Image (cartoon, rainbow, N blue to C red; front, top):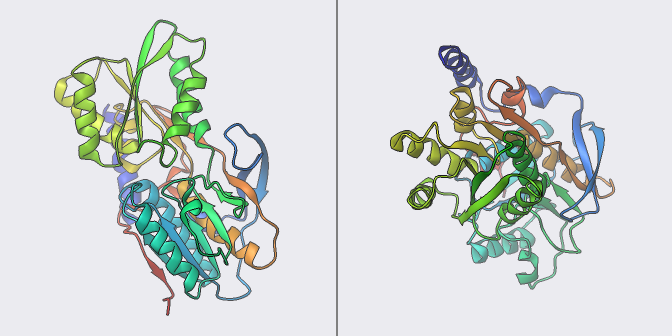
Length: 354
């Protein structure tokens, strides 16, 4: 434990000294990515590629970004990558957040504003996959799906990872840890919003013909207090051997298990990474987390948008290969690819927008 804490203090020092938008990921010559086919499907085949980001843009393009929210480290990391690449390429960038996954009307209004104003392209982190079915005016600008699935024939590029695989890989990890009957409770995000449904599908598939069963599935918006209520309710009726959930849910679970003295009885697995989850892994309080390199995702989204504006063909389903972080096996590149610096706050404008 002492060694783990020393490692974590060293990590915090690195994070605290990291200046915003000064990140080694910005300077690499290529990124290791995956192309996935068929487009916008749950089950996909992948092809590994080396992607070369732009050194400069042909003009100062204007890009509008719509996000579900900026309430957690996941979307903050995406924001950090977006801003870093926009600054590098000297673009105009405007970022708008809807405030949550149930804010359909607000995101539709933001989308309409981006359509009507002087933007060249839109990066859409949709609050729900079918949002464009609710948008009635003509779609007269290119739209690229950002992180979340976007079901529309008008969209043929998506930046992100396959969230079914996020659930599958977490489930495979749990499956490999046990050979006896084991229960896992799933604390997913908002019901049928974001990637929560796909995570559940992937987890279920990973556990077929295993000793592991899903004992409960609970949904909540990405709010630690809401998750705390769900966890307390869950533990009042059962004590599963594992809890798998979003980073925000697992962050809440760490405190509750410590309070209830259940740390030795229940193991925690996160479907994605956050600074608190990484700290939990260092302190042996979280066993495993997927890592989908959100900083790279944000940078890639800007880079792909510019390439398509400059004449490149659609990129299809493209993003990083899902990595993993676990006790005793933390990738040294994680601070460069997956987390915004500790002192970073979301930025909503780059180079001003008239």
